[in-house]
Length: 294
Image (spheres, rainbow, N blue to C red):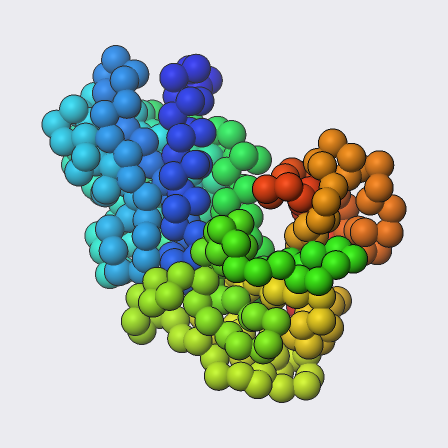
């Protein structure tokens, strides 16, 4: 069982893993926290982009010798293969940690898997720690692996003219690989944020057929796509494939949104969160029925 310190560390790892949203594709956004043998945090790190060090290595580097005998708390099972970087499970073994907690198992793990190799090295492993919380960050990446297409979010303002480039909109863009603007412009959520040979921005127009549009976005290397605006042509083409809608409700305090949201949530979507952005409420709804066949 995870201790209170370890649960706190996992929530911290989940929080910092989100720093990689919008830049890690095709790799997953992962966070890691290292606790020393007394349970005190001594290092943390996250994965930024393909080709850079993974979260575990960054956290171990920060911790140094204090990692020996300690615990690694990581949001995704440590990788078990040599790619552009050495396997993270070996870095943990070499650092002589005594325990590894992981939230989500990696479906792309090679061979026996990083968790099994860690156990064979005599390291105690705990799986599924705060898995559902970690899926808030890792869920879209896993969805993209499972379906073979990007996770698509459509963001717009209800019943009003679209807002400008405020800070909340910019932050939302930063969390996605690709952004399709209202005028059809396509850009990286974080400009030049991905590895040079791992990602490209497709040239508009993407076409008039949904399958061709989806193919172009997938071939670009995107795992997450944000479509902006009520009247976005791409949103209309891909309406049946949208996985998440984010609806800003102007001049409506968050506490009043649930009372006035009739008709705001599209059919087939389930409200999962009500928040606020400045002076307006924000609804987040996800599709109720899996679209895995796409």
